[in-house]
Image (cartoon, rainbow, N blue to C red; front, side, top):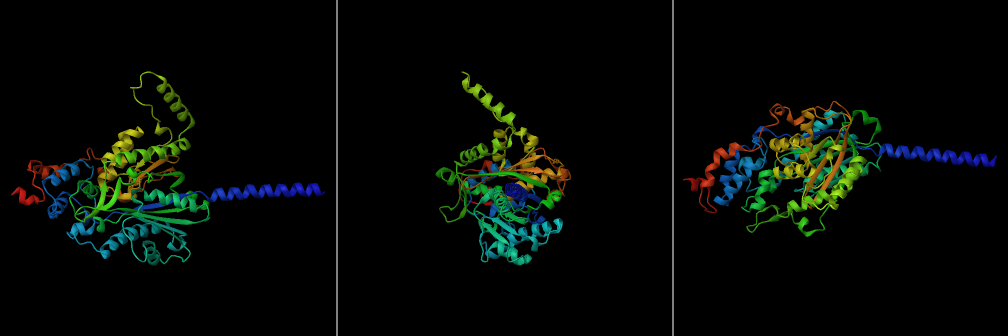
Length: 462
């Protein structure tokens, strides 16, 4: 009898352990219920005429800088309908102030959150975790505190304010929430990603610091995530894996993208010549962890076999073997950091123009919107009805540090077709060419100028 009781007790403990493990695993899932991208008003568009006026106002520029700006603007992949900060449009970029900077952030954060809560039927009081990722601005009280006050959230909401993470902050936030979900069961989480442009518009003439002015544009996004199994049927996507790499231990990687002051005291972002190498290494190191966990075994075996044969042959001048990324993923959300970034990622991953189209078009229509950029890419895929249930999406985010942070999502429903911010323009995309020919047509005469530094265009032209 005692033996029977002991066996029964052990059996019940085993059943309890299995059931508890099941509950923990079930609640560790991370589902994306919805997301909203920010679209500014039309009066903030940086078209050719507005950009020309902006350049004319900068008294620190000369003919060399004009030629550089013309060449870069034409080839950057940026279109005529991107959005700039209010002070640049109004001509007050020389005197940024805190109230204007916070107003810009409020428009993005509150504008996307209002839509996110309304469209998903979730009340702000239900939010358990709040993560804000806006790198280049600080306030007291903090930015999350502004959100909590605006929406009167609960006093036990778990708050995280990620600053200085740059363009890869969105995936970092997703990874953070995923880990928090392992502790906080049956929770809702909100992530807000954006960038503050008003206080960070560069007004000097250093080429390495002028490039961000051309690429970075106004944008942002808000995400709603949950680990509630009861919400699975309402979710858009399920997080399968996230991998982070930080190469900041390398001096070259650390200094490849920094916020500094130039010799005249103007503050801005400096992009060094070591940036491409730092980015390539970060991607390579990240993929060493990510790909063995996501690509099918047959592809890994094929790659290992072909690589071995290639290394043993005398003729190593042929094409280096590469993994077939499409064996594990159907879609690729690449950070729209610039045309050069997209081209390099396309070559290294073996992607064609169809695969790169969403990223190129997001860059053309909205510019580099920092950490929010990959969600504009995803929104383009939705608007074009590319996403089907069971598809896997690889999101690739690069950022200062230097960091490469990636995550893999599985599409949970076929009806992912919300046009979101593409509503008024998706019919015009894809465009045949992303070159800004209108800028070239209007300012091609700049290439004929003689070197005359620090003189305005209108004076030189006359």
